Image (cartoon, rainbow, N blue to C red; front, side, top):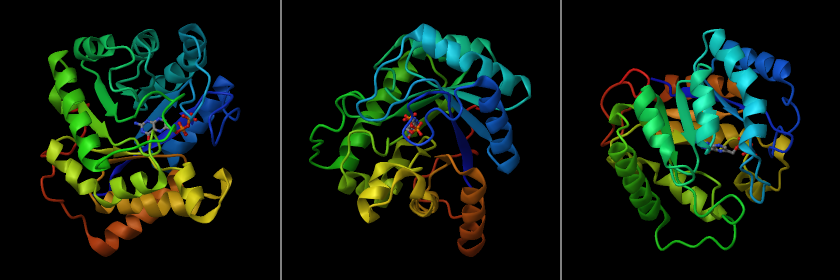
Length: 279
Ligand code: HH2
């Protein structure tokens, strides 16, 4: 089975790869429809950039950016996740038809997002990040990055469960590029299979990120090859959901890799089809 593709829609002026392209709601909705036509099963709508050093956006501004896009895409029957760490934005998005909250702070920004997801029966993505987007790239250090990310995700999973979120609706993400050096990112991808022991589906986002550029000096718009290679590798190591900007190209690469390798279930893989919306 090929992992699900989560297509990225950044309704921001300053996202690192596509900032300003989809700030207009109609353009963002059209882009979302195009990503679905290309094979995206989930559309991840975000109104605030998490790139290193990004300025924070008020909840009112973030809501104004994402609400029409969430409503337009979920109204057309698409599965929408809201990429936010703010309760008010998450709540408005779920009201507007989103069914998953993608919280890059893993309930550390606004812990009440846990209760919100529990009440609404929404899916929840918990991602590892060291510090906050402003500070995360200041000399990241780990004794063993995989062990530390795994322990963090296990702890955040417990917090989400204590808030009442249905375990079957929780996905975990090692947070590629969030408070990690090149070597940390590579190590996490190389040993991704170790995170299967957490028993929950894994989301992985490598698309266009700067660790690719650190390997070959490529600029953000030149990273398709590295994005695809890392996505295919993550899939082979057991990723269940890949968060990507380039859906058509990623899907073709994944179908090819799957055809060659066949779907292999890594040791310790979670049961079920890994869809938190179904439970
Ligand atoms: N990466 C980004 C944003 N949200 N969410 C999850 N779960 N996993 C990720 O790896 C992840 C994420 C950063 O990418 P992008 O949205 O393209 O850029 P920006 O944050 O600048 O808008």
